[in-house]
Amino acid sequence: MNSAKTTTDYLDAVVQELKAVDLFGWEVCRVRETSNQLYLIFDQAQSQRRVEAEKIYVQIYLKIEQDGKDLLGESGWTVNPGDDPAAGLAQTLERAPLALNPLFHLPGPGQPYQRLNLTDDYLWEQPQEVLWRVRDDLNQAVKGISDVCLASSEIYANQRELDFRNHTGLEGSYKATELKTQFALLAAAEGQEAESLGWRQVRNYQDLQISDMVRHYARYALENAVAEPPPSGAYPVVFGEEALDALFNHLSAHASAQAVFQGWSRFQTGKPVISNPRGDLLTLTSDPWLPGGMKSRPFDDQGLALSPVTFIADNIFQQPLADQRYATYLQVSPTGSLTNLRVAPGRATLAEMLERGKVLHLLRFSTLEPNPVTGALSGEIRTGYLRHRGEALPIKGGSVSGLLDEAFRYVTLSRETEQREAYWGPVGVRFEEMNLAGS
Image (cartoon, rainbow, N blue to C red; front, side, top):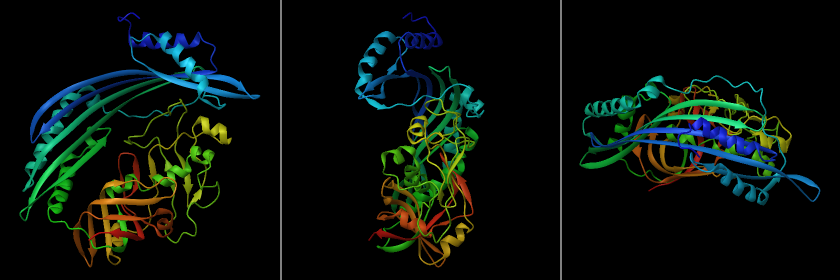
């Protein structure tokens, strides 16, 4: 392959190799990524680098008859510009008959793709300037807070371009930006020292709001220096902030068409997802058009056009979240898999949710991931408060646990909402009883 060829020429060469072979189908996705990175120790730059990568992901499909049934042999490979596509294709053709699956057809042309703005012009055109501006924002924010210093930070200004094609003539492309920062704050309070780790991922520089973010995590650092493990027992719990990123995951897992096809989903279309609910009713939507959402995109990995789909409405399961493969297997309409999760808010204010009795307000965990099948939840507390009679005692350590399917029967969702990386919904989710293993 001539190294002087452009990447578009090379993508065309890969496509021509695929067209020359008798295949049931194929898909090609070229991804070009550029990451500008800045690493700080205290307030000084330690290193700066720029990483560029381009890869072409190819998937082929062979129709193979076995025992009187038509099945699909599938295999794929990753092509680096400069590789010999013919050699890679020959090896992939040998592997494809080893993995047989039921037959399905890939999406075809004629799909209307939603026009989405996934880029920040400033971040796209001046990524280096954005890095240093965020560094200055960090340093300026920390200077205004006593007894807190910036120990280290990492800043990433990323750009991504994606081009997709398949054998039907379907083509799609989009560009996206991402600004990511991670930092560690050190704090001293009452003769004790503590650390607080902060991070945020956004599409646009304006959404980073680094000053507010630093003040937020600086408070956690100062409180962590004096926080204590909470007493063991059963408590009402209000989850917020980082906990919201995982709290609804097992519901989304049961809503996937793959789970339905494999037989472990307990959801049935038209039936309640939570039995005998006594609290707020859940309405969940997969929203690929959410402005600023980190999972927003016009089409999925197979080129299927995406649009918002409400898969749970007032506690009733509406339809599975199905890509083209599993939609064919289940004979349902394809929707694409889960993108950004939008949760409808409730009617109570967060203040009301925190005032009823002795309440745990839990915000950050070392790990928090519900079991996708059982909904069993367990997480070690990193940041939280024990609230009682107007007081908020900082706590850390100990772990909270419970079964989410039971907890959601009595759930209260806050009226106030917030947007996170791939979540838009209530700022607080209250469960009436969960178990705490503490001091």
